[in-house]
Length: 206
Image (tube, rainbow, N blue to C red; front, top):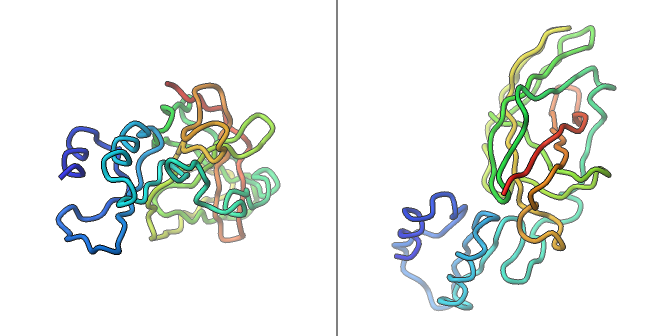
């Protein structure tokens, strides 16, 4: 019943969790994924249930602090957006709380002389980077599986939504990207391949 209480008292803390009404088998550990900000909740669950629970906070195991994703999954594949004839800009200043995620509106402009189709599963993917371009954070949680094509005519723009996550992928930073000024790189999937936006300014707040 602790999971039911958490859903009511701490909205957004639970990302992936078992059915609280499921009867436990003796050999089975319950896997629970918590948001990157929910370290105190993870500590409470670990103290109460010990080895009965397999905990993940953000993109890392808890309390071990080991990355769940492989290093290859943290790379930024794709060609620069300007080389692909695309431009991405934020509609308003980008800001998200540390350890949280948010959906923000962008404007994608096609500078090429031919129509380009943007493939999206409702939200574009993105990564938070430091000033040197190293990936430091991303969204950690379920994603939409569907995909649709959004054609953009030459010299035209269309709005798109980007999903911004601040689960840290750098153990030295902790489970969440710390507050401060960072960069955001948006991944565009087009009918011609993978494209990376120029780094956008983003503020991570406490």
